Amino acid sequence: MKLLEPLKWTADGLIPAIIQERGTGRVLMMAWMNRASLEKTLETRRTWFWSRSRKKFWMKGESSGHVQVVHGISMDCDGDALLIEVEQTGAACHEGYRSCFFRSVDETGLDWRITEPRFQDPGAIYGTKS
Amino acid sequence: MKLLEPLKWTADGLIPAIIQERGTGRVLMMAWMNRASLEKTLETRRTWFWSRSRKKFWMKGESSGHVQVVHGISMDCDGDALLIEVEQTGAACHEGYRSCFFRSVDETGLDWRITEPRFQDPGAIYGTKS
Image 1 (tube, each protein chain N blue to C red):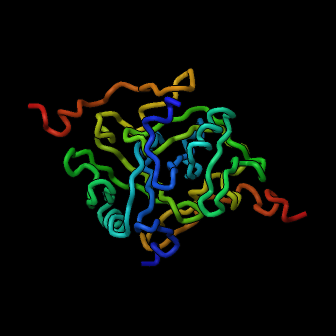
Image 2 (cartoon, chains in turn orange, green):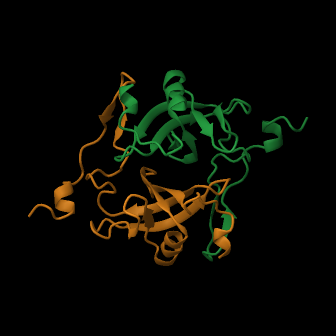
Image 3 (cartoon, chains in turn brown, cyan):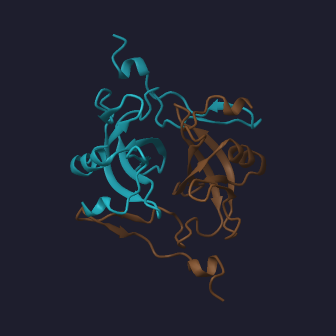
């Protein structure tokens, strides 16, 4: 597939994918893709990743319902990172925040603070609460 | 340093850093930081990275003058990626584009197209033209 040719993969066959929300421009998360997940993302217009910890191919939202509809895919000048523009259903973060980047360096420059309210209860997202 | 504790580094001691432009929300580039480059970034409010190809500690803009003034640093829920909000001088990309993500998947879904005009001549940036 011609589209894959300029891309540079890690030794493990992965490329980092930055997920950005359409409209707000908010960066929601970063995850890893392999060739199969990029092909599946192109084919289905939903985001598919490779989980390094679970060694598993997964679709964002497959258990939470919080799918990402893909509106655009860009690569950087070196072909070693992807930027994917999506429309996000619900919270992107499994902890219930809109974005996974909900902690920022605080005023002291020495610690982190949470910068936004939780959007959803993570227990409710994953059905661990009745 | 307490700030570094929750961060997860690769086997090579690196963490990916997504650089986002303050105001526009545009994602400009992705690069890698090691502990020293994050500490130097916090200290100087300029972005410092680790180049995997050149095995070199570098400040963005050190040769081009296109520095990034840091306005905020966030980490993701897993502590394995950073998001850094910056004010960018000139082009972020060494090819003269405002963002390194200047190529997107085209209408056919089979190839890439350039999505913006060059902002600066790369020869002029690096002084290879008189």
